[in-house]
Length: 104
Image 1 (cartoon, rainbow, N blue to C red):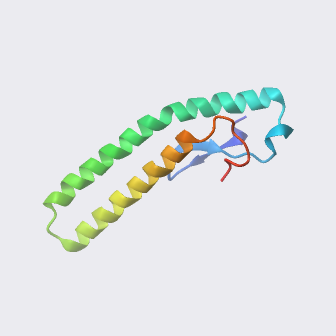
Image 2: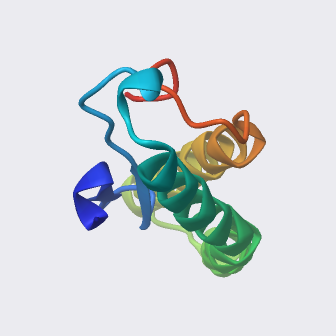
């Protein structure tokens, strides 16, 4: 049943990957998908906390960095981590009823 989700390397979580319209799934499959999605959603705040720790470490390095190109790389890395956090919050807030509208 994991075929209804795929692991998003960038986000570090499984996200829905629905090939059918929601109503085309059996009630049993819908329940499985919703249950599994709720378990994934529950892990998102922990994933965000991990990324926030990475940002804090990079910000600490940045405050002591005197090499301009290295500072630029750290800023880019921080911005990417912040973008991932934003995307994770979007998934976290996604409607509990998984549908093809949620599918990316």
